[in-house]
Length: 228
Image (cartoon, rainbow, N blue to C red; front, top):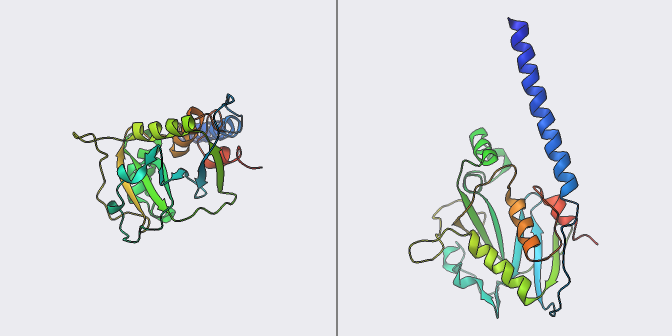
């Protein structure tokens, strides 16, 4: 009886490891294969950034521009800080709400939070952070786009928001902000191992006709398309 139990247990463990290996291998291939792009004819005058914290990818836009003033959608008053005069850029990322609010550091990760995030059972949120400057690095790349591409990104972010009865973004009242310059908002969709925060960002890049992978679940695959 014990041998049978051990055999079944070994089979389950082996199956899980095999699935994870296939998942990682598939992601590493597809994320580095370039999604199709078409050549645009409009002048590329808008500077955006693809930025990672080494795990999670944000899309970073100019705080104000002719097409969009992000402070009208994400009020600066929702930030904890009061010094907002020198903000130049706004970063937007999407992810599991429980992970965002309950896991300030990796050491705080609970098995229950990881399970909900991996299986798509939880709610999601947009994390919005304001920046005074962007520093180019192996985790931060600038890219010039045209007005059509930018409008696509604007519409994508807006379409990811969960809105209240008045059509306004729903601010999440929490003490889980990462600093003085960020806030969280309710979002649409479900997070899972097949649709992660990086999948959300990669999809935005594809829709905006920017460099992106066919499918990406980790930040490294996305960033590989911006390395010179």
